[in-house]
Length: 145
Figure 1 (cartoon, one colour):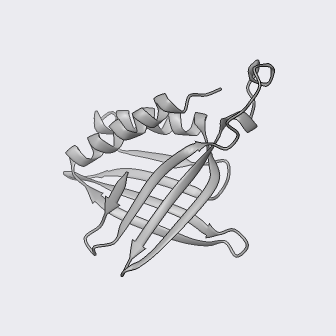
Figure 2 (cartoon, rainbow, N blue to C red):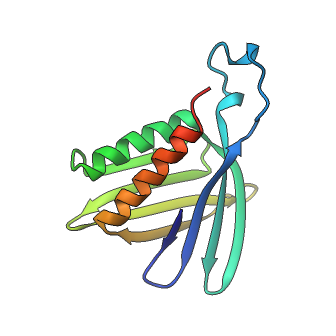
């Protein structure tokens, strides 16, 4: 999913896959933390400086909950939703603001120093619907195992 802001900066958010693709059937008989970690790829482009970051920081359960909350946001059932992951590397939130939505993605790009970037974009209702649809596709593709 590609996000852009008014400054011409962009952030591309992608889920690459499960951290551990090959989990045995026996390991999947009960909830398995290792089986449910997802690898997130973020490409950040600001002032012609492009950087790629990867992190296994998102659980399938967190993705599913955020997707359900985005649905509530787009249906005007709530005014704010947040993806605050167990691993402190990723935080996403969306907030209704009059006729549009403020979408924020915060990502730790240097785990040893804790340096992070924060990207903010204003989304229209149609753009929020698109984000929801993409998150729903990801939730369907990366099911809780």
